[in-house]
Image 1: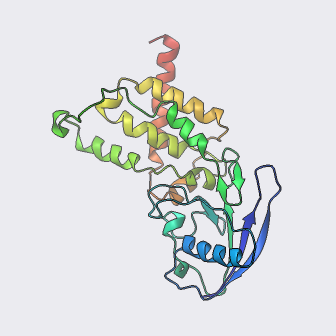
Image 2: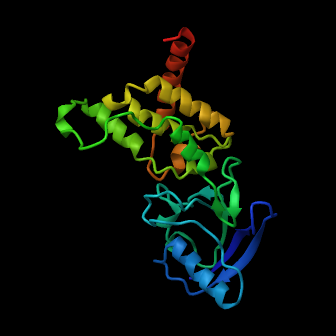
Length: 251
């Protein structure tokens, strides 16, 4: 398969970027998208050009670092999947493919397709943890949890923190990510001690990072590799309203 590529090139955060055109030939349909970029970089290095900088780690849809916008879609057209799970058979032979970084103000570009998603880490640091003793894990059955709650908690905990929800949202909202991190702890007994402090801290940090608000377009849910439900946003809003009232009452 042969492809024409338009890839965003930006030497540094302070530099202006542009889309540059490349052509790549004889790519197997079973080649992954990131492997295709590897092959392109090998060609660029051989010709004495600067390779395209992009992020990847696990290449199994687990780590969330392969944050690419492909033909205008966060992670590309094969939803639900991360960019590393996208294969060239998803495209037509001879197709022009546009590759850009996630376009979110809170994710500044470092170089080419590499972005800084530290804003998501700071949201988690603001409350996405529990204060529990360290040491050996307790017996799993010693704390009874209703199956409905445990299933929902596991669904929320599946979030890989890739940032695709913010990249797809017209408001650049990170509410799906934040709500997943808040909800999976709010649904478990271990998360109750800091429940109010957690939601207040994480939502306020999300706002401080410059993310927008949710207007229910559901683009976040559509592109999420982990298929996180937008219903968690409603749960977070309820948690925040209750915690805010308690905070004002001094409870």
